[in-house]
Length: 348
Ligand code: ATP
Image 1 (cartoon, rainbow, N blue to C red):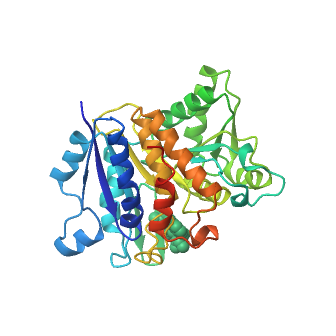
Image 2 (tube, rainbow, N blue to C red; image 1 turned 180 degrees about the vertical axis):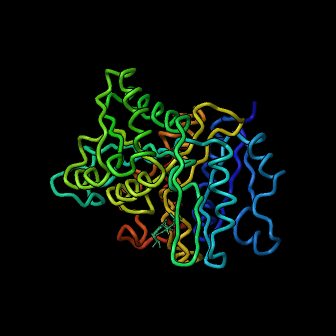
Image 3 (tube, rainbow, N blue to C red; image 1 turned 90 degrees about the vertical axis):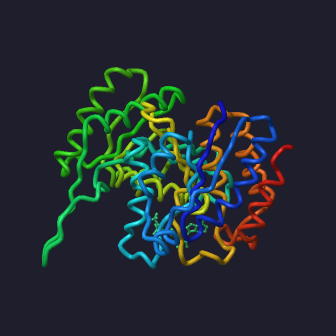
């Protein structure tokens, strides 16, 4: 059956970085993969012009008609309450049940790792971030002089995330660390730790421990080498993965893949760079497309196309090694030139 991808460029620098990876999809097809892809217009521009965010029929078409989604970014200063971003990206994560968000940190260049005495090749951390609930569930109240944010955690989602994290740590033969603040967030993170203890007995071969998130951040900066898989809720996972983005060159480099391990729908994955829409860079040919390329590789791997995923990651590594760099990496290449530099290293 033809594998179908939905491409949503979105807002800000999203369309610019997505444009650079579209030829990669053609390259995958040229290698004999039965792949089709189509562009979808959801984002601020569409919302401001028509009032549409992500109509039901369009959501259904993504859920039942695509195998995966390649996503740029959403967020636009003209929509200050972020209503459309919530209705597009957060909705896709939640309603496609993309419970696991993996954000790998594997620095490709010594110069990108700002830590003394640590070599790039010694760091390989994957953050497994719960993607659908926790403090980012967007429930709360605002009244004069008082505001409340709720953080809802369900055993089903926590178990799904931690099972995926244990499975990954077991497959890699590496340590698993669960970031939490159960000492103060007694209810939500208390639930996390109960599920964690339960799963730990099922995976005796995985060296696993819980760690207070604040102490974890300190330890990561002092020495990231002992860490393998780090599992966390939505909020802590966001913070930890942005710190780890700094170990691999910054926000422009870090990739992510969200997926639904239980495969409830045809569409089981969404790949997007860790960065947002960066309105300060939009339309200026300044955005680094590397995170988008590496996210595309993660999606190709999820689809079972390992040789293409590896070739794409190798092309990124070769381009960086040979000095290709956008301004955020200290170089002078624009988005398009950086994209071309990476694609030129793809084997034909
Ligand atoms: P979000 O909440 O959606 O994650 P954010 O407010 O954290 O978004 P980003 O859009 O991720 O912000 O960007 C933060 C800053 O990082 C940008 O203003 C920009 O300077 C830099 N940045 C982000 N993405 C890139 C990129 N691809 N290339 C270069 N710099 C980037």
